[in-house]
Image (cartoon, rainbow, N blue to C red):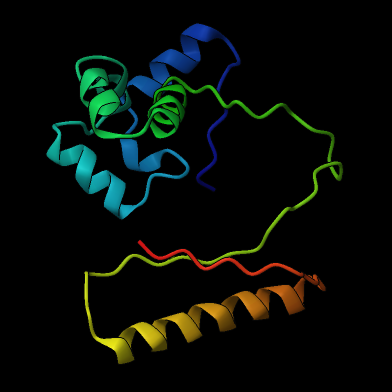
Length: 135
């Protein structure tokens, strides 16, 4: 079924993570994968090895720290008992080529807002703050 049982020892985790493709790390999407590949980084062992100085130079401190920790299999989140975490927000994001086409941008904005609204309805969530971030 695609699941893999990993012994919870430092050695087992290190061995498993070393040859793992960076794209397999949660939070690494197509764009970050492409950038890392262009830096010559394809495996987690490269993130913590020869690629570390490049990552520290290219990415922000927060992103670099997250990526270095993820590459060795460390998550900063503490384990919570099921049902004790509270979702703070609902969002949606898309990456697309740079454009100045106002119709396209307006259409994309409406589409993303509709997706968020749909998710909010499904989860019976209400909100009082809307944040739109464009890069």
